[in-house]
Length: 370
Image (cartoon, rainbow, N blue to C red; front, top):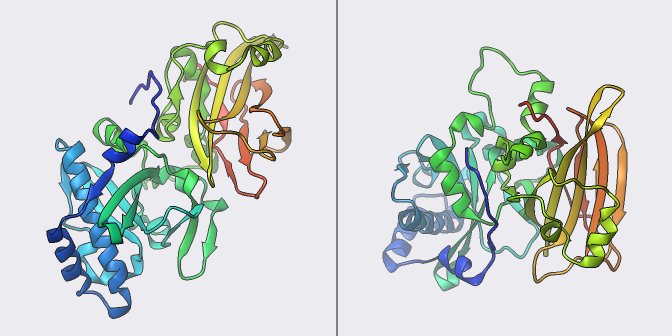
């Protein structure tokens, strides 16, 4: 597993330039040759896919020469794989299966994935990598990545688009492709596999649910659990009011919540449409009530640095049956909400824009002994 002990500005200009790949004439010629092996109506997409693959190959060569890559089964070289449309499947990196998702514009809030790379077990990857092909500029941008596990855990919320597969929110893709490289180096495939490789015993629905919860209890040991790591959460080194709450007025407003020094927190950067958000979660134990172990979860939603939180953003926290708390932004720079429960109780957080675009995170739970 990977411990993340410090935060990074993932969207600075230097970082963006490092994932921009200039295509060479030889790569363009190869893409033309590959496209000619496809049916006429598929040749343009095959051409774009080949350009995306060339950019991805160059990016890996620049950032991860230590990783073993296998393109022998890559769908770009399989003309019969035209049904994959804008997806490039079956790229082997170490023991992981990687799928490239190709787009020509990131102006939309959704990305289209063919059903074959979502629904078919043999095609379901560990990672989806989103690549933008700027064909006129002869340039490829490696945007970010999405865990297959996360996509499967939220597949019920996907919209099905006729002849195009699924519409996946752009915000689900973590905008730091180098974080995927760390996971390719240090994680084991069975820890992030979207499908079970052990068919001897079928997992129960409760077991499947437990695999997609975020165990905040281990935060007290300065650790992130597997699911939080896969979703690119970042551990705050220690809880600090100054770090978590920006202004003195805001700090005074939350002091009444009684946050102790032993509280611990983590954050995740999200993007909904063109809104860049940062979600912070802080947890701590409460005194036992009626001999039951009790914990509390404090959620803070704010804009990422140098951006703002628009009006009408909703922050909701649910338990397994009911809506517990709802906050709606007006002129504030942040929203926060707090809930509490016994160990093992689960709370889901939903963020929604005024336009209706929303995202629900895997449930938070609390088990320090795990």
